[in-house]
Length: 225
Image 1 (tube, rainbow, N blue to C red):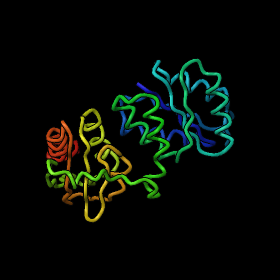
Image 2: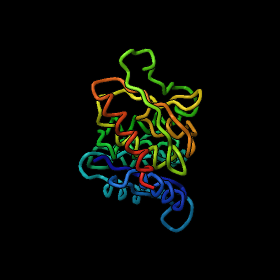
Image 3: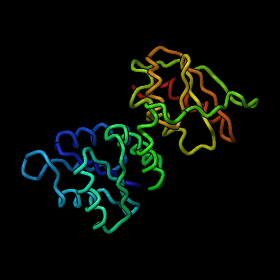
């Protein structure tokens, strides 16, 4: 499984981002590396290298960073690492969450890195998250009530993505006038669908029926709340 390293000038920030992403991807090794090594703000090249080694299970590591000089340190540490390491320029929190969820689903290094780098586009609108399945006549559709208290926010959204990631299906979730790719945790969170809301789930592909069934099942179990 791909590991993650979160590099920040602040030890608290790095640890907080790693903790948040870890809540949505409990099997993924996410290692924070923050501060200058002496309790102050900054970055520590040796600490970043050690974090990469700890995160690498043999499949590879994706490294995210916060500010400019952290990128330089991350690049240097990645070059010296023994395994496959990709340093990704992405929003730190959103990128870590997106990457962690993809890694949890068993995605490879390139896919995990791509999920992180695409994080900014989800909320900026530069990338359309809808898949256009509404025009397909044999789509499987259902309405689902969000029976949990928080709706499609962090952990529930991650659960949906993990449930669908391995299926041969394109799935769209609609809430109001908005729609999102159900395999993108950030896009699902961006819908802002609260607890008690009703969403439409539309799926196409060989596993469309199973995809819809899995979303219904998660909702029926209140997403584990």
